[in-house]
Image (cartoon, rainbow, N blue to C red; front, side, top):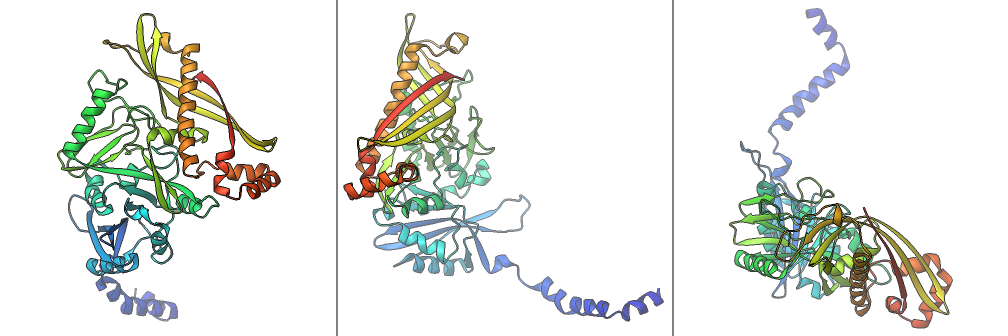
Length: 454
């Protein structure tokens, strides 16, 4: 053994290694952890109150405990600018702010009265806010949303960014990330869509649910009395999600197959004893030049997404269908979709043609004063049902198109498609009308549907 140690000591590399251990091991052991100097921010909220900007940070603070739960806090700072506000929030936190892990960015409606990009730009350029963060607007202050969402993960197993899902498997389908916002903001038409969350008091939520129950003739009930949800949104608030601040009992019955595990989408509802609740009703806001021009209902959002081949699981409801001596309402889910489009100029008029092949699945039938069970008798799409479906789907698209035309916004890529496929004719037409964002008002849309059971 002595010979072994003597041999090691004769090796210069071993001596260097021992010296490194002597000098650096005590420093590594006794130096403070990174969390002592830097706060990990999981969500950012920006508000404008009384001419001052308030930045709120939902922070994760690692804490030793026996339950393995994270300690989340909301820390705020106010200032005359976003930079000043986040600096003061950093002082209040007592740590440097790290935004690399921020998954959600929230602004209130008041901030959208001005160009929101001027404030978000600072966070993305200087504070390294990632562009894949989910970008959300709320009817209340962003600080309230963060305060209400502090216990989402511990009570529901749901992160805030999951509540506002933005991809093809989640509620919105339309991408509401910060990157998508910038892409629309810096485009020629300067138009984009971001998600929308509603904060309500408990009594408001109860009144809202009661009104829906009284007004909706297509609300579904399972045999055990729980709500039956289908798809990722419908015109009957089937895409509504409620998540509370305190104790939550998650009802996962009837979630759509496209939902990610742990997400409350397509009708998942939670009960609460909390005074405030977060509602995702499938709404969104339409922005022009970074400012809010109109809030979109879920029906209008479904109409916008009609030409999006990735947009699946929406519910299409048709009423007053005569079957024998009954008057029924049918709910169909868009299970698969194929979109064929073409553009051309005919007699100087831009024409956008789209043929949609929709595979629809019957998910619910509601009759008069009795329960109607789904069976093979109703699985076939009759000519009457096909006609009503054709009318309803085209109506949703027409209503959405009207909103886009009124606000001179193109969030479905009409300008880009004409530019790629008919560049010379398109550029000449733009020179004639002078305004590129007004082009959508002159396009003649021809929409045809092929509806088939899936």
